[in-house]
Image (cartoon, rainbow, N blue to C red; front, top):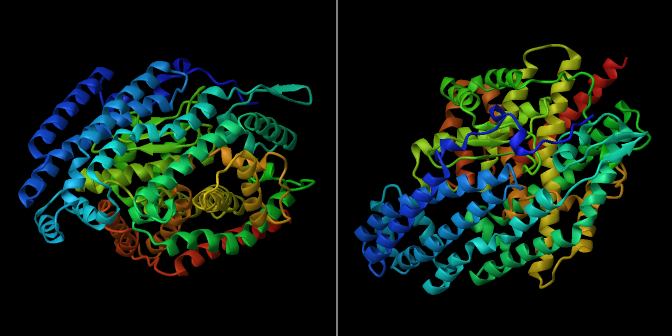
Length: 602
């Protein structure tokens, strides 16, 4: 039975991350922010009205780089303190104050981009040729000249930057602070319920009565907050549409794809091809789960069931460490040194506590350590989550050691490649350690039920839903709770067909993801995993030379477009071929799981 969550102050500090790796104390952050204000004033006094020569442009951007580093450190420090405890009002107040200072600085210095862009193309090209750390930043300014507003308009928008993030903050407060769950009962037994308890425990629970009762109780609580959540999301997508149109884009999709250097074809390909060609494979996977667990019917509440819950042992954090170190050893000693440091020096927040952000993520302040959030449940899925987030840490470490902060604004299309690559390397390593059929089925089911399901199904369906919402808003409409639920239910129905019964509450899945408040992030998971799958094939077939190519990619930061980064790793994503091959690989894994199940059951 799941245990009642502790408050943040009650958890073992060894299970928490150490934010002193950014600043020793909160006072150090305020000191850095005072330095930020001073730097901002000096840059404004020295360069405003003078960014019309190559030397002044480069000198200004060299000083502005220091501003960006402080902002990166302070914003991460303040936000990460909040993410682990949304009940802590002091941390929320610190974040709000820090963000207000940062917004004011960004507003004061918005003239930099405006003035640089106002120059003739020839002068900008000369500056690009001469610049070192800011070369690619200048290229982006040149490419985006047509989408910049008047300097005063840019200043005002920058001043409102934190306010524009309000929908996401409201969403998180609804989800993590306001939403209090009551216990639910099954056969006279009472079970505690919470966001992370449901998503990390009950969704995978092999007891059908408990699992479905938890889904019903969880959905009932979501339903109570659907209108406020929908209002927050409608505000966000409307803001995105307005910003896009102000900048001369036809839609927010076009705006985000332009910034990520991704074509509309690449974006739509991920959604359309997976929806069409992966759906039959996943419906087969649902049938396999139904048969293995002898279910009366396959419902939406049953889709996260493990193939063999009785086989996977509980995994301690120390055992997980050994798995990860062994599984990722192919990436080299320097990479494993980073993994060891992450465990030894508290980069990872394992704790389960009230008010903590759900899911998992990795934050990597520039040239500092990384900070990995997850809620440890002692399952193999946690090991894969660890490997995933360490993939982000490794990417930002290698890029940060070799690139300026100007080259660290990772494109969403590629950013999930290093993380999902690590999951695949883990799985391939484990497949090589045993010939036992049950073990092989277990590993394959982790790949399909976790890595590919999460990235090629969960986030893909979110992306398909998000695309429909953007279309409605872009055509002048707005979206309310009922509309959002109808859209999501149709997306689920189109994908799962008649194989899966969409029990009441399935349509509320749109309420569960923060990615909708992060541009087009949802679709990028499948894009990243497509690259990772193809790169992993190269590593399996070619060994050390492919690993070295991959490290070149990780060191490149954002000096190349997503398509160029893939090409540097020897992967071609200019056509449908890589994605279609990846879909067939997933289908092959599902076929093998079915075959092994038949053999094991005799």
